[in-house]
Length: 159
Image 1 (cartoon, rainbow, N blue to C red):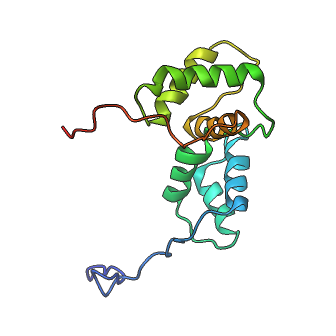
Image 2 (cartoon, rainbow, N blue to C red; image 1 turned 30 degrees about the vertical axis):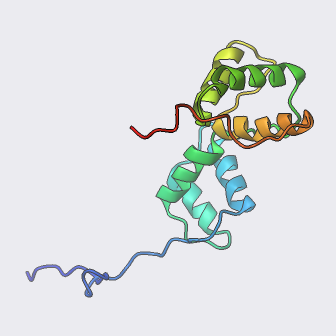
């Protein structure tokens, strides 16, 4: 039996390329499809999510890109749609104040918020995307410049 030949690729002109991933921005329809399919019980398998997302325009998203989009952006984003309660605003202010003396990493603020709200069913869960978004809302309601992030830590010197 003759040896098998691999289809062409750029590094191997005799091997064809796979589908090209879309380089454009994510659409709301893609995000909604990912959330709908992953928030069901049990969550839809990634291959089914990929098929459904690629049926939408522009298409061409890889399973890896879809998984990263969910894990890094959508998974912890606030989906409730309603405004923050006074209790949630107080917890968020406290979380930012606790770390305002020194970090621009929203993950730490989100972790502190989660620690403060532990066991409180009246407050929503928020990851770093939700915390950053709602902090901007709280600051604008207070008439302050949201400024994006808490102050950076350190003395400005590189280590």
